[in-house]
Image (cartoon, rainbow, N blue to C red):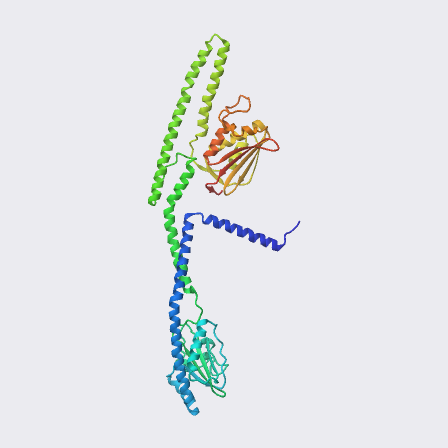
Length: 500
C-alpha cells in the first residue's frame, strides 16, 4: 500500500482545517445577531484606535515639550554643579562629597571616579536623542571642547557607579536616597560624565522629572488594550442579549413562513417584539387566515360538486339501460364511465394531496424501509445514516409509495438511493422499465395523463406525488437513464435540520 509523505499529510490537514474554518465563519456571520456583534466590535476598535491616534499626536507632543524643558533645567543645574566642583580645591572635593551623601543638598548623585564608568544604554528613541542633544548643548556653553563629555541614559537596576563593577543597588540606601529615589515606574536615569583632569572623572546621575516619555510613541497602550477588551466584552454581552430578545419573534416568524407551505393550519403567531416585527407578524397572521378560508371554501365547493355529480350520473346510467338501441346504450355508458372516473379522480386528488397532519421530524430512511418491507426482493435501498427531516410523514410515505410502486409496475424492480447534506435531502428512485418519451416528461404530471392502456389507476399518482413534494418546498424531476429505465430525483431542502 502506498503511503503519503508526512509533509503531504500535514498540508492536506492544514488545507482541510482552513476550509472548515472558512465554512464555519461564513455560517457564523449569516445571522443578524452575529453581524451586529461584529459591526459593534469593529466600531469600538475603530473608535478607540482613532481616539488613541489623536491623543498620541496632540497630548504626547505637549508632554514631549515638557520633557525637553525639564531636561534643559536639569542641564543648567548640572552645569552649576560641574562649575562648583571644578572651582573647588582638590583637598575639599571628597569632603564635600561625603557631606552631600550624609546631608543631601543636590539633586544629583555625585562622585569623583578614577575611571570612566561604562554605561549600558537604554533602547534608542527619537526623544532620547533630543534630550541628550539638549543637555549637551547647555553643558558645552562652559565646558571646553577638548574635554571629554559623555551623556547617556541607564536603567536604574543596571546603573554602574564609582567603579565599573559596582551597581547603585549594591551601595547603602543612604548614598542615593537624596538624589536617586527610584519610583515604582523605574524611569531611566540620566548619567553625565566629564573628565575634569587626567584619571579623574566627575560623575553625575539624576532622574528627569515626569513625564517619562523616552519610549517610542504607540497608537494604543497595553492599558488601553485591556480597557478596550473589557469594555468591548461587556458591550457585546449586552448587545447580544438585547438583539437575541428582539430577534426571537423575527426568528419565529421566519420559521412559521417556512412551514406555512407544508402546514397551512398552524397556530397564529404571538404578536410581540419591536413595532415593525409586530406589524409583520400581524400581516402574516391575517394572510394565513385568508388562505385558510380560501382553501376551506374551495375544498367544500369541490367536494360538493364532485359528490353531487354522482346522483345525475347514476340516473343517466339507468336511463341508458332503457334505450332501445344497444349501440347507443353502450356509447352512453362509456361516456358515463369516463365522467365517473373524472369525479372519482378529483375526489382522490383532493383526498391524497390535502393531508391534515402536523409537521414532525421524519426518519426518511426508516420510512423507505417500511415501504420496502412488503416487497424486499424488488426494492433495494442504498443509504447512509441521515438526519431527521421536518415534514408530514403520511404525505411523504404516500408520495414515495406511489413512485416506488410505479417503478416496480413498469420496471419489475427499483433501487432507491438516499443522500443527505447540510443543504438538502435527496432521494433517487431508479427502475429498469421502458422509461418515458422525452416529449412526455412534463406532460406526464398532468391529471389523467396515461401512457399505458391498463385498467389500474386514473393517471393521478405522479401529479399527486409532485404536489406533495412541492408542498414541502422540494422538487421532483424525471430523467431517462442512458442504460435504460427511469430515474426519479426528489430534492427536499434542508430549511430546518435536526440531528439524530
